[in-house]
Amino acid sequence: MVRSGSPAASDAERAASAWASRAGERAALSPPADDVAGLLCCAGELEVRVRALESLLCAGVPFMVAGAYAFFAYTGIFRDTKDLDVMLEERDVPAAFRALERVGFETELLDPRWIGKAHAGERFIDLIFSSSNGLAVVDGGWLEHARPATILGHSCLIAPVEEIIFTKAFVDERERYDGADVNHLIYACGDEMDWERLLARFGPHWEVLLAHLTLYRFVYPGARSRVPGWLIEELCRRTLEQSRAGDAPLRVCRGNLISRRQYLHDYEKLGLVAAPPEPETMRAPLCRKGRRPGARQRLGKAEPGGPERAAVEVEASRLRKPGS
Image 1 (tube, rainbow, N blue to C red):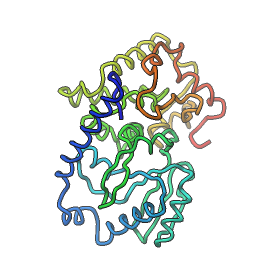
Image 2: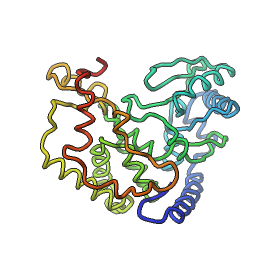
Image 3: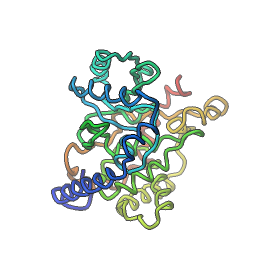
């Protein structure tokens, strides 16, 4: 994990040291084992999760733990959870299913676009290989930048904080909004994060990142510096350039990327066009290890209309309504 603006080697060392220190502090915040068992679930729930972790580890399936467990590891905020979230690449789902079936789970591909489930009676494990909106596809970059942690007594990887933020940033339903989670993650990990890689993840949807960073600065005015100044300047520059360019040329509503239901009126009654997930050709390059060479240079002036215009025009002709 590196932070832009400093030599990669020293920055990586500082990040590793900070992570080790904070991990120790958060371990002290963990509730006593008896309390965890009482708060989390009825008898047997933890055993199911441990059995799932052990089966995946023994089978050598590459995976990361996400959800409430990863959120606690990063922030120290403990919350009850109904399941265990496992992130993995889509190609590894069949191997994960076989490993879980060998220890008594029943598996199903709940939605071929993003999620499978493994059931042990009424208890279950989520196996997630994308986000429901199709943007946050789990790829090699997730595993490469994942962090080690101890989950339910087992040494595992947890999903990178940058990818967790990227996924949560697009959750904006009436019954669930993950903006507070994004704020907590930035407050806890902002000094250690690879902000260039996070910006690349958002690609043409950088306005969503700006919205969350604006809210973060409002919530934590005494910790604004945990978001690098160059990033705020870059996003503000893009905003001004976009404003000068005027409206996009199409009747587009990108609400489908942040909510499944809240913008149906716009598509069904107003005839607006749903935004597609980001085309592969529009995705910005992600660093494999360390700093992206010349990354700051690539943040220069964008083409008129910005990447969102090209992304929308690529798919608009074939998309009219979500799911059509």
